[in-house]
Length: 399
Image (cartoon, rainbow, N blue to C red; front, top):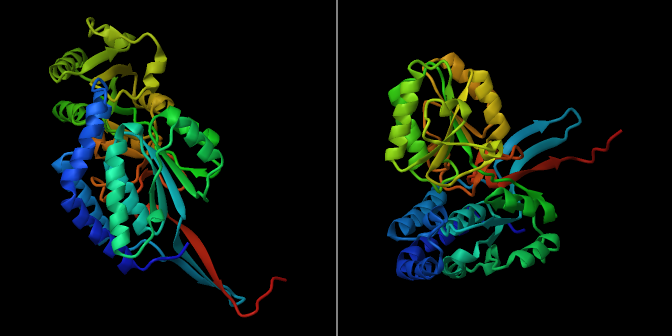
């Protein structure tokens, strides 16, 4: 794959910024077709599908931020000259062709493409059928920006395949694929892993936990829980499970207070057997597999743990490995929790809603990786490169 100069990449992005502004009306009209055809009962999915003026402004901002970032390609990682005279330089390099499979969110069509393109990768965008009109219009904008700068459309391609066609494509793609990022639920991830013939980077479920330690500041705790649960239920960084330490002072009162606050916010509260002894009117969970579920809804579970160790064990058993929080004024307990919990992001006294490229200083993101190779957490511009060794010699042979 030919390496483009930083200048030509940034010219394409500058064109794209102008085109998004000029075609704002067409983008929103295309999105309206998708919204009119969508079943609004799935609130989380509907929220993700909406494109309004604010969303278009966000798209423009994402492209602007990436344009202003340093080019991540061809950056020297290390340099070493061996005793035999070989000079070995390790540099960043593009992946090649990246495929992303996602549902509902048309803004991913902008964020994924701008990141892949600036990192000198081609990208195949496999959006969901629910956003087909929006995605077609946005990719049309990309093609206009590419054409203005003398580049071919194949740098950014939209795939409109059904499930069977996607399966066939994964098994026998018509072009070389170097990386696939499935951005969705476990069924989608399992489907891609089963059929893909190249590397798959997992952008997994949220199912995020918050643990209320015995030394938690109660006012902070309530504030953080309400934000993490209700701020945006469709986000993968929303809170689903709350664990209380059995040694928390005034435990019964605090359980009742939190329950009242959550109900006032419109959150359905489920409880385990121990919490049910206090919150007697709430629905008791009957099947422990619900601890694995990501709700994407105004619903949460409140459970009880004996101490920080049992909280860690429960989180590591059931969470999606995305984000976990401990609420405590005990810094030692917080540090132990953060070291031992197996999540991409671990928090002390803060909402899980900050696991986001923009909020973590990464800027636009392709996804939140819950994988451990080659990166974990927000996949920003720098994370869309791999590496290559350049070895310079003068006739050396191995003996």
